[in-house]
Figure (cartoon, rainbow, N blue to C red):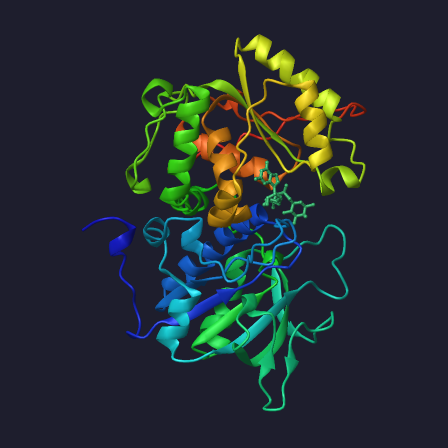
Length: 401
Ligand SMILES: C[C@@H]1O[C@H](OP(=O)(O)OP(=O)(O)OC[C@H]2O[C@@H](n3cnc4c(=O)[nH]c(N)nc43)[C@H](O)[C@@H]2O)[C@@H](O)[C@H](O)[C@@H]1O
């Protein structure tokens, strides 16, 4: 058999486990980006040893504020298709790690941090060193000398060793430390967002990104909504999807998209900071109306995290807007993460898309549309703030196969 699935795994039969976590305030779609960085580290490790990536359970995210539902210890399979991830790199869920490794212990934890002294201007160099911890540790020793920590809400998990690594560089810079400086069977990198991409926008980047296929049950919900409320089907829209991402390679400009405008309107913390690059609701609606006109579209699908008051105002300003409004049962079933996926999936299938400045939620929609084969002109668009002088549009990151 050919392809990444059959890639040989050198080394002993028993794998070593790589775990990671991200700074608590970071959101869902920033975390998806950190996964891509860690996946390229794992690819580097696999060149010399047998490693498996343990997927960090989702939960306790700042933005997941829906009341009355418990959103911790959520496995990746609730949002993503595990077989698809496994066609890129070997991954397992945390529960499987617990079962396989026989215990709640993570042998070595490295907390990644910057350099206390910063760096001198104009002298950027990649480096990594074991250093004293700068910030107060989020781990503490219990009476048995084991380390306790957040561990994704798994209260029985313990760390055996915790130390800090000052790092300035791309993900694979950690590889020599994992291969030579430690013999721990399981190693966790905390604050993994401190690592940069090995090669942003390159072939490995896109392979990993393409492997992050949304879970089928969420895609089905999005597809049914498109059909029912937006007259959008894959046949009519020329968005042909293959379940196996390794078999999918669409020529740019092939996809037409459904007869609607897709909008991602990020609010909450994006407006609380009074940022110049985010529009008022009136400004956004004005832009939406002009786009509907230019592209001769009648329907507009809006994905937003706006608070109830703002939604009410939006409804007044734009009565024809279509949104995915979950019932209580749907919310409980899909959770805030699943609703984000459904919104993104519907925006990804629109004839034309416009998003919010520097929101990773919008960036992930750009990528999804790039995978589906949309003309970049219909994708890399964002709202401008009313007072913004130089409203630069998002960069086109061309897919590489
Ligand atoms: C200020 C920064 O903002 C960054 O947010 P940004 O890139 O927009 O995007 P995310 O990292 O996804 O975080 C925003 C979260 O808010 C919710 N959300 C935002 N827009 C929508 C929407 O249209 N529909 C639905 N269903 N949910 C939405 C959702 O839970 C999403 O994961 C954070 O990642 C950083 O950690 C930091 O907080």
